[in-house]
Length: 122
Image 1 (cartoon, rainbow, N blue to C red):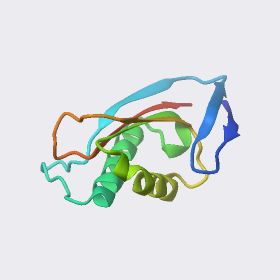
Image 2: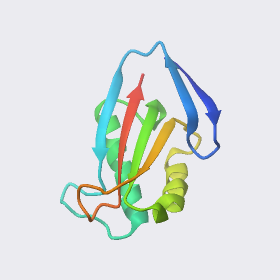
Image 3: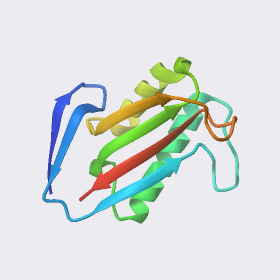
Image 4: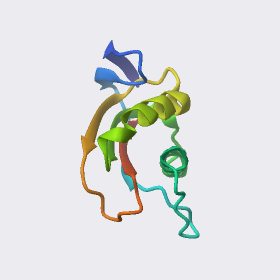
């Protein structure tokens, strides 16, 4: 597979992301900030890190990793989480820069402050 960031922002996402000659795609359903035991952390930062951990768990189950991400969609419950979300996304993804959309919206469970869905390719 060959990938190319198009107009990377330097903030762990690109304006566009090209993937050619891939073998398979994996679509990760919206991952939430909840442990297997049903625990939801109170702080946004903890929820964000847990949600990324849950995304990673799904990617790993498909024999993929963050490096395979080509598109992410992040749903935030409030604009006030934009800065922390960006900081933690950069912490988690580092130089990985998939295409990204952020949507401010009501989320299914009011305890959840974000949800992340992803598309990965290899």
